[in-house]
Amino acid sequence: MDRDELIFNEYKLYSKQKENFIDRNFKTNKFYMASVFVIVIAMIYTGNIIFLKTISATLVFAIMGISISTLWWMNVDSYNTLIKIKYANVIEKIEQKFPVKPFTDEYQGIDEYRNNKVFMFSDIQKLIASIFALFFFAVCVSELSPIVMTIFNKILAAVLKIKSGI
Image (cartoon, rainbow, N blue to C red; front, side, top):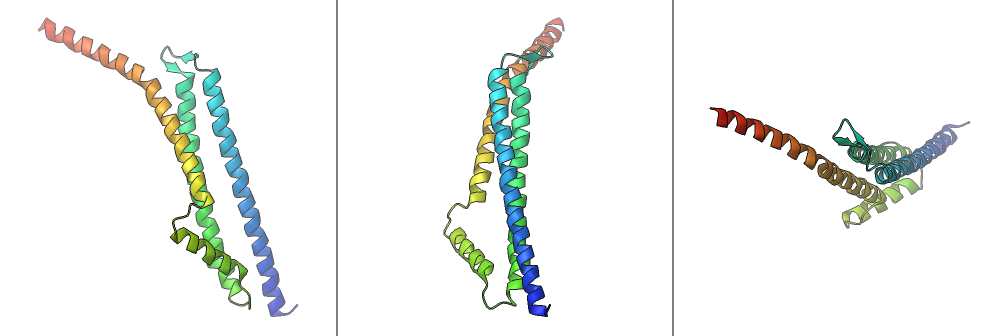
């Protein structure tokens, strides 16, 4: 096997691994999307369950939802960075040895779209994760508000008792 054939075989292998990596990214996003929907459904069906006299199942699921949405956003960002590295640092360097550079041309096309402020798929994924995080945060605030107000009223009543006693 000569040097050019060896380089080409490595290029094909790396290109296939990159595609497998992208497929794994899509599977991961499906997992996060399914997890978020399961949490929303669990919130709907367990809304009346209360733990420790004040903590509702809705609050617990909202906190889980915020966590999962944050992890989802971070995961999309990590995959996006790693895919860019695979394109720019590895495949493009291998393609410098070839007369045709399909991945380099593709990546340049993606960069041109990015410069025109077009949303890319990873941007949409991050937006969806952010919307779910905000939704779960709003639910968290609505569930925590009565607890905070109850604690505040107890503290205020104690302060007023102490103050009236002085």
